Length: 389
Image 1 (tube, rainbow, N blue to C red):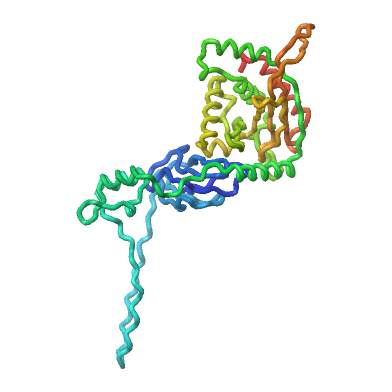
Image 2 (image 1 turned 30 degrees about the vertical axis):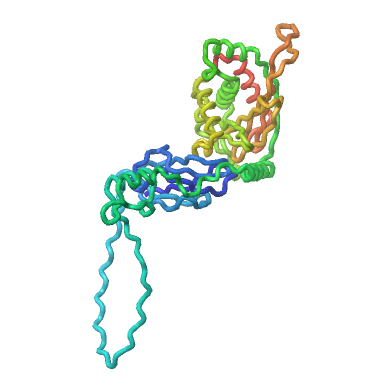
């Protein structure tokens, strides 16, 4: 028997509201299947299961606020079955003693009304289950008030009177982010480094690859930045992982959390999984997909649970440098600023050159300035060889 719990979707999350179940008892689920929608300060998040099996029982009703770690559902694993215990036989009551005198009749017990499942056709039951419609809320038009397929179809077509998800609460999101950043500043001894990266080669490579592509398929500098960071982390893995209770735990994969500004305010940093193993075109496709879903409130729990480092860029906002605050329990954050033209020495000649400021904030419990400088130097080197990405 497996337990599906309310996941932690970041250091700034204490609880979430279960908005909707996407699976019902008896449904088979595989690892990675989306089973529920949970609302947090980051918006509505699609929550996945990390176990395969069959939904045995749902423990929480939609609309309930649930602390992180609370069981939400029970899953039966492959080959398992749940056997309910048989009721134990009750001992027969002893014979009543002879009555010596008539006793006054006791007051009748209060009448209780049991909820009886409404009669419904099999097709109506099936459609009601698929649409998440309670049969008790449907007026039946069949014999004896039985619910027919047409009744369920009418109910499905009617606007729902149930409360809808509240959507993104920017005030609550900012409070959650502030709490996480305050914790970071209190617990993590930050150190900061920066370097200037020449972009002439990266820009020329992008221009050559984008010449024959439609706008929706063109590569952006952000894809090269993410891939360069991912490959640099292979050589310096102490920046890729988490520090919990003062102990560094290196991550098994490189899952870069990409900071995305949400329209109307707020910020999320969902992960691009195994960034180092993706081609630049795949990184670009993942980035476009994440940004679109983050801004429409359709992120998945796995994308918020396991970023191993964060990359942030405010270059498109005109900022030349950004020194980030580490998102716990991560141990580093890399920032990129706006490309600008500066005088640059090339082959002994001073020429105008596009350059960019790259920064690093890292955890001094895990690394030091020497190793941090090597990380920035490796990112710089990789961006000078874009064909190697």
